[in-house]
Image 1 (tube, protein in one colour):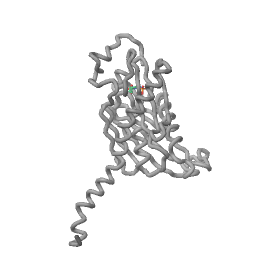
Image 2 (tube, protein in one colour; image 1 turned 180 degrees about the horizontal axis):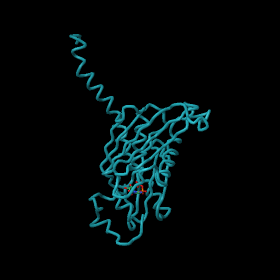
Image 3 (cartoon, protein in one colour; image 1 turned 45 degrees about the vertical axis):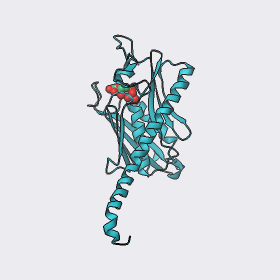
Image 4 (cartoon, helix red, strand yellow; image 1 turned 120 degrees about the horizontal axis):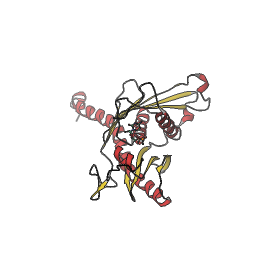
Length: 257
Ligand code: CDP
């Protein structure tokens, strides 16, 4: 959110600037197995956001003092590539915002990964934003969740992220950057869909108690679409293998049928 200086009109004739309805997500596509050396990986395009997520581990936690003998530790690095937006980004390492997003992402996964299964180890999550247009923490967690699931590391749930904003008195789903800059409030959330657990909730601006409740409902509703895309992305490599097997099967099985 920012000042109302030269604030553009974000809703015109009941539509948002990019033509979306208030509750409409940007187009999302997710692909797994995109980084060969990772235990699990995913690439997400969410509107014009382009984000890679890779998961490594579990491996011995190093340096040793970071290890927990009872459970795995999660380490996370969220970064925006220097060329990812028109704004200037440091080229030497994560800035304060990246450190904050890394921290909240790590906390999301600490609450869903079955850490006790891997004592003394670390699991590394990398989220690299190649192109950004608002909502990258939500899209980054969504991709990282697919990467984690595709690695086979057991999780109690596959979380998704989405941001709900307020433009004037209207709640809107999935703010893009211009909306994020000039909206009256922005509430990024990460939810575990199985039980509707809120794994991350941040807020910029002001929302009433009722608006917060409605925003959570809107996020859960949007999550039905996002979770389905996550699950389809996770199934895709298996469906491809199955398809390949089906095509090869007749020649291998001879004339049994
Ligand atoms: O990306 P997200 O909405 O989770 O984070 P934000 O801090 O609310 O930033 C909104 C958007 O502003 C980002 O997605 C970027 O497109 C842009 N931004 C940027 O380009 N450089 C920054 N240092 C901060 C934000």
